[in-house]
Image 1 (cartoon, helix red, strand yellow):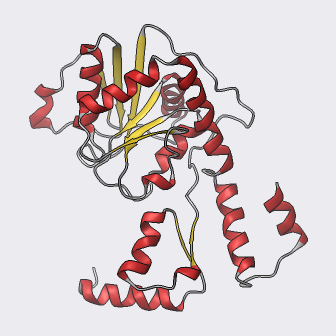
Image 2 (cartoon, one colour):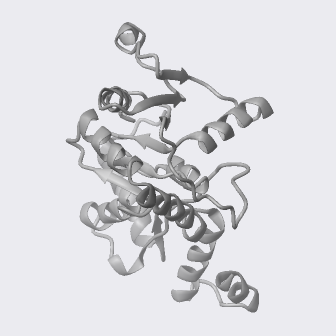
Amino acid sequence: MLDISKKELNYIEKRALNKAALVCYSSAWAARSAYEDYGIDTSKIAVIPFGSNYPNPPAAGTDVKEDTPTETCRLFFLGGEWERKGGKIAYDAMVSLNAMGLKTTLTVVGCRPPAEEAHLYQHPGFATLPYLNMDSPADLQRLDDLFRSAHFFLLPSRAECAAIAFADANAFGLPVVTTDVGGISSFVVEGESGVMLPLSATGSDFATAIFEIFNDKQRYARMRIGARSRYETTLNWDKWAQGLLAQLVQRSIIEQSEQFCASTSA
């Protein structure tokens, strides 16, 4: 590693930002740091959320409208850091939902509780898959099945820059239940593609939010459609590229072409 101080890194970052003709961020939260922390001219800042990295998302026009079943609510949690992603809160939400009379399961992929705390997470509705290999057809199919069978993508993150997993979930028409922290609000449209609770929200608070949506079939169906719409209109890499090209042309960094016009109007 380079022997360089935080002060020097900030100096390098500020110089790079000042020299740039366009500074593009994935969230309004990150963009705000550019002008609040580095004094960058807001006129050259753009916000374009990242797209889904899922290799084979459902095709365009996929019918994602689904009535909620009356028996089991399936929660899906995908993240690599148990504590930062709010694993305990997600578990508490699942336990609370069962206590409220709604049979609920929680499947966690990518991490697990700390070994010394494993005895605290023994609910029969709780399952973990610490690792799935995206290059393995069998593992990818298992992940695909989890996205398709879940009712909510639950990720009560403690800190988040750009949760691309939200874009993956929305590709499957899966509503997101998360916290309003960091860059999340640039990915989730409150009440349409998901819901965001304050950082202070407890597992019980998340359970209440999920319970209300799950038991309102029309609201749940609208949210599934809204989630898929969010993916199709914003959270995919084609839309990201179109947004970037538009910003480059708007600032005369590149020239507009007929091919560009066709791609941005698609």
